[in-house]
Image 1 (cartoon, helix red, strand yellow):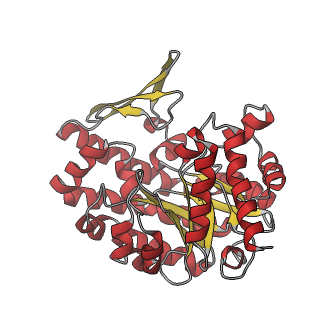
Image 2 (image 1 turned 90 degrees about the vertical axis):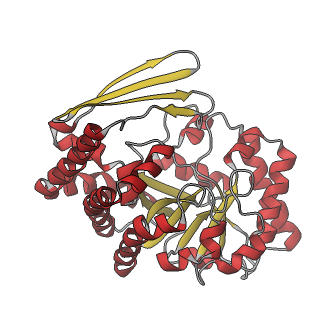
Image 3 (image 1 turned 135 degrees about the vertical axis):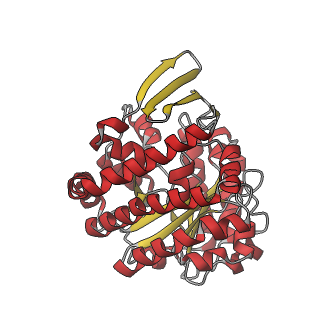
Length: 385
């Protein structure tokens, strides 16, 4: 399937009578690797797998969190890590000495249930906040001091990958917005809310620092000629409209403008609830070209997609959403029923059928094939090409 940012909207247009565009989120490539009997799948493996099953390939390159990436160029910013595994759980501890004391992160991940994890509090007191401020400002300092070197290293990594997929799928750089760069590596979901309410000036100051990295990545993506710059935002189950106004809108709108002015698509993934964002027309303010992932209950709150669809900015391509947990657990009949429902509810619009975030390790191939079989059955019944 020939795909690029120039024809994405045309291929996704469900009013044109063609076969629905399918683009599973095979971000970590483990699913493809498992089907091929490999430890990891190359880009060429993923392209061949996409051609075998006739879906649109999607190359997503991650560059977050920036404090970890920049640490490669600053020895004083490198965390010491220790990982211990048992039969079910991975235990990871990271420590970093700072002028204000040692920061420590302890995480536990369940091997089979990938979204089951626990992160202990890293920021516990005022000294830890000083240490966080030091880490972010030192990281941005290293970025600016060694900007040309870091830029070339990232381009050397990105450009060959983009060239492999050009014309055969979409190339996307995924990056966190400044609020996530400050929050995600250092706070739990609860403590980050306390932080922005209790220390709004410090939160804004650190996000302003992190904004330099976001703009830097967009600059690199433009030079590498990627098809899209993709970021993720939280839904209203976590951030209120006021927090959006103070900590997301001021950063996402200039990044969107920077991206679109140079050619790439601006692609927004919403983690969680998005009904309120749609109804309040937040996405109109973002200037979004591609919008995902339309989580249906119980994972999300898109409970009436035909009604909510009218709140999507005109011309925006939507993408979603067969829940990864449903694809993993089944049964096949429910996978087919849900796929059919999504296709019916997106008729007449620019829409890409997709999974949510990723395809979980251990997802049966028969479940993946059931989703694609439902697309074929739907297309045949509708007489689509």
